[in-house]
Image (cartoon, rainbow, N blue to C red; front, side, top):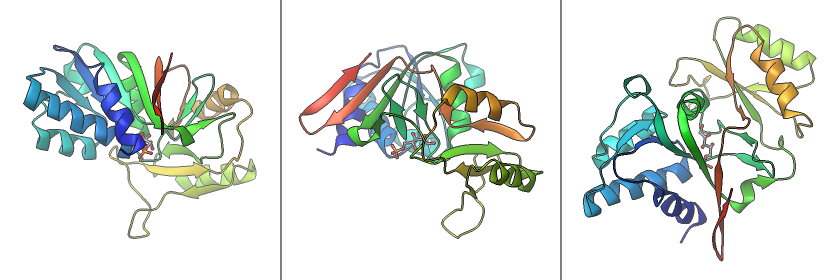
Length: 222
Ligand code: 5RP
């Protein structure tokens, strides 16, 4: 079994009847959503899902998972999502699938978050994966130039047609090719205060549990 599928199935075991469940985005989260769909169909599991992207919403609807928006629920009991990089102290980069804004909003209103990754995503220091920064289209070239001057090696995220990608929230993504992020907290604080930055892919102190896929089986880190 593929490692991403293994951790997707493992994480779905934490979903219990009556829960409001945040459904992440990406190729790993897709397996978890499939498994929840299977449990609803075959085991009569009863949950409400809160999706983090149009892609996940489409998948969940096709599987018959009842959905509510983040604004329709008081709180999310558990969110399960993928990640692009996770350091040993559970800090992460997300947004490889361009869903970081909705993912961060859903995670923020979740009592518990689980990330599911194959072992290649566990790193000593964040930054080899380009850090996505979601920005307002208006003024985005100014931010791009600022990032260039800072030595952040920015690039606008493109879609499959080679055009600038537009996120589900109607924004652009500038990826920062930093190679290594020595101080994720300082960088996050810097990006937070830039006008025109909607959100960034540094997810700091947001996860309670990480399930890592290895050939020998899933490993759960708390
Ligand atoms: C989407 C994300 C994804 O969770 C992240 O990119 C991991 O994706 P995958 O499971 O496909 O490797 O943050 O915005």
